[in-house]
Length: 482
Image (cartoon, rainbow, N blue to C red; front, side, top):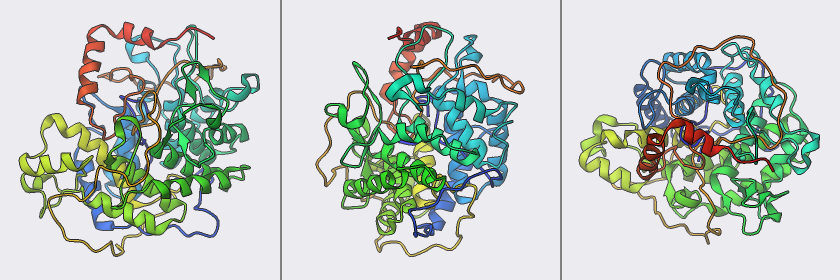
């Protein structure tokens, strides 16, 4: 789903931008009004209340910079909670290397490509200077992390940089989409970066999450046997390609249109969406991100249905029961909703609710990623599909379409799985020094869905890994050179 590193990331954006090349919906399509402005406003208020000192906590405590960025983007999409957004943006700018490196753990020389691209997007969408965000030239660093001409079919791919022996990169379609969005909004967009993203699209129109197989990178989606198409990755790619098309990139508009068509075919009868792998069932993360992409592509009726499905998982004072005090929060799925209505939101579940709300909110606001920070969201709500408010959500976990083959790995809510670069990139030094985090978050674990997905099982695994030592965790992520 939407939005960075698998255990420490998410989306990001803020107030109004200054240096941008705006993305627009498909040609001739006007940006839609939010499906339910009141629901979006309530979700924004709840999410803002979860911030402490400008950050959102992670499942293990401390600051979760990826989730904080997701929260910034979500609040920016509605234009609400400005003081919280501004404080959070300042915190992220002051902790750039806490998010895109292992510096806080005493392991120098590593720069995460996906996290850096996402930071570039955040800076651009927030109206900050992407060439001096917390003292770092994020645009220059992102450009330096793009695989060069000698990388063959990997040319244009966002990669990670490390001084250690490097192997296949773990960057994915979320990372590449953020690279396209960030570069398009901050200046010229290299065509190679767009071309690599397009190669992740299969003939059916959907996008795969990972460009690599067990044997190494595959040249294109159609050359990977049994490639699993992913709703969340497709929604991200569609929005990135719309931004690329507006920047004049060749082939982007057609690819975005085919991606939107594929998304329409994945929508369940009740308007919801599911992801792939462990997020296959209907959930608010996939529904929110897909709804946002459909709105960006001008599929207004489908976007409205997705937004309505999200509202069925939103707590209100009327339907919240024991969780009425958390009105505005959006559950990940029906089970989470009914459990909260019965007993409230447990402290151990609160992380899931934060992640789900941050991403699902995008489907209520329906401001495309390429436009967040540029367009002021409309404030007047438009009618939503007729229905009776009830404590029991109507989203069905059973899709109405034939599922794609089982993915090898996981599809997840947050973009930016980390890894080593396929092609080393030249070092770009920051123009300043960001303050280190006082409470460093654990390094991201590859392949774990976090934004809104049920992660208790992953938490137990992560705790065991952390118990084995951070150094072993990091070394385990390194793969030998090809």
